[in-house]
Image (cartoon, rainbow, N blue to C red):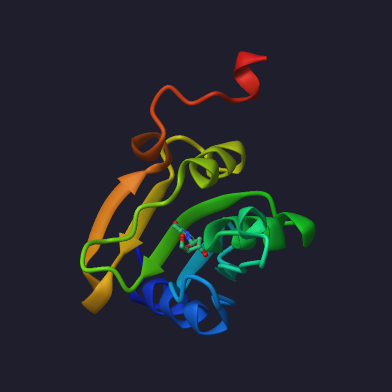
Amino acid sequence: MLKPEWIDLSIDAQKNAYVPYSKFPVGAALVAKDGTVIQGCNIENASFGLTNCAERTAIFKAVSSGIKEFQYLVISGNTPEPISPCGACRQVIAEFCDPDMPVTLVGHDKVQKHTTVEGLLPYMFTSKDL
Ligand code: THU
């Protein structure tokens, strides 16, 4: 069940976004199975392709801290409609999160869209395919 505080933590994470090029802050709150919430923000680079999106930052923070089991992901931006994660992030999310794990996408004024990992990436390529 989505907790309102996870939405707030995702929005709060936007304050650390390093976005001198796009001026497009994104925040993420990744909830571990034990309830720990890992926040992430986007981190850009003068070499634009090296940008790390907010949700990948959260996943990499978690995994590098030894946390690999998750129950919920919230991604927030200041867009009129709920933000939509990029294809690369969808693949990284699918690596670590179950297909039926809920994902909430949040836009301006907390407008929300509720989906799942599989909803974001149907027919996903995973370790099961190898
Ligand atoms: N971005 C994210 O951090 N997450 C998303 O889900 C979509 C896009 C970032 C990447 C870049 O810093 C900025 O948004 C504009 O593309």
